[in-house]
Image (cartoon, rainbow, N blue to C red; front, side, top):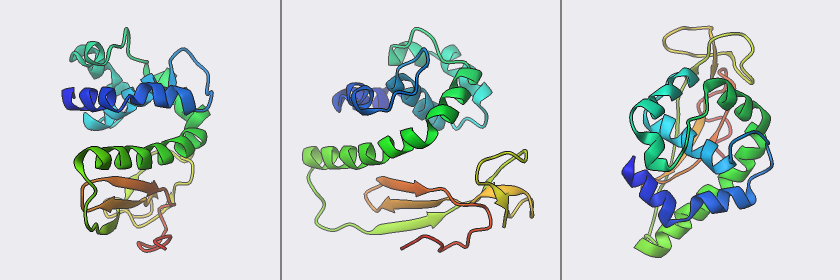
Amino acid sequence: MLLVRQLWDRFALSGRIDQHAPAVGGRYRASTMLETWVAGLLYVFEHLDDLRFLASRGVAPLFGWTRVPDPTTMGRWLRRGGTAMADHVDPLTWWLVRARWRQTGVPNAVTLLLDSTVVQRYGTQQAGATAGNSPKRKGRPSHHPLLAFLDTGDCLGVQWRPGAAHTAAGAL
């Protein structure tokens, strides 16, 4: 987490996010919500209720948060700003990769790697989830995201697809 905090500060991501992020509203700045989301991803949270671990394990002081958003607040924020925020995060990802390359040097050649996975969903109201090819629970609602990585380790994007999507759908 310390490395993430240092990189976040080194590239001044909070200011950049707050300057360009769409106005989603709420008590927390967009950068705080994205920091919380990234920290949750790194902790491999399975549910928004797991946000409590960020407060109890010293992550909040490391990131300079006075408090961690509760699961209801995070859920509402994601629903209100999901699409608009995704449109902001994609260019930010490309900007961050280029900024890192400016400091470490641009690779002579890179390989684009595409992969897909199945994300099982629970409930019937998950946006875009359809009965798909889930290896664990066939016929359950799921998403089948397509992931794009460079061999440098940089994730360049995720295309969320319904569970019934073929592995190569949308690759072009």
